[in-house]
Structure formats: structure tokens, C-alpha cells
Length: 126
Image 1 (cartoon, rainbow, N blue to C red):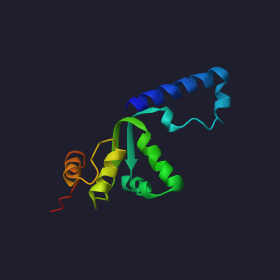
Image 2: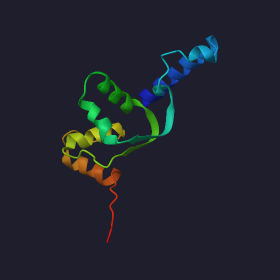
Image 3: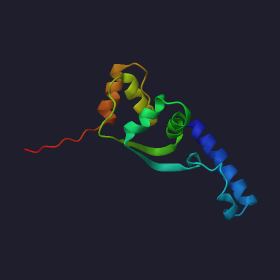
Image 4: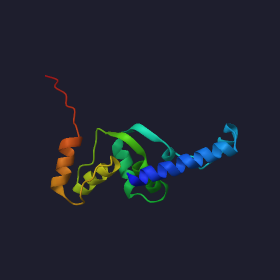
């Protein structure tokens, strides 16, 4: 969290200096303004399992995955009908994006995370 506060302060100062030097029209073409500059109340990852697939990718997909992990928000929700629960490492990755610590290769901690943070809806069609 200290990093987020420091980075947020740096980006806020950078934004103030840009606004002081330029009018709003000239900022439209500035390529340095990113989602990282904002603090969000809530981030909802739809099809959450797709974002997790990017973690193993190199190039732009790997960069995009790192950017998702670094976004600052009070709440994070991951929506998916097909979570990858094949290993404790995959569950840890899910927890990382949601900014919840789960030790690597720890089945018990992974199960605790799933018990507390993952909900499954079921249908009763009887």
C-alpha cells in the first residue's frame, strides 16, 4: 500500500504540473496518462479466468496482466463461470490479482482463500 500511495502522489503531482503548463485540449494527445493515475472504488473483472490466462504470457499480454495487478481499488471482484482451480499456484494467482496474499504451493491457504472469497451460485430446477 505504501507503494500505491507514493505512486499516486507522484502521478497526482505530474497531472497538476501538466494542467498548469497546458490547456485541457493539449492533454488529450498526451500518452503518459494511464489508469494507474486513478484510484477506483471498485474494479470488476468480467471473465476473470481470461485475465489469469495472461499471467503466463510474455509480451503485451504479460504487461497487461501486471497492469491489472497494479491498479488501485478499494474493492476487487472477479466474475467467472469457469475458474481455474487446478492447482494451488493457480488459486494464488487469482488471489494476487484480487490483492489477497496466499503463500505459494500451500493447499491449505489456497482452500482457505476459496472458502472465504469465492462463491458459487447453483440452480435448483426441481
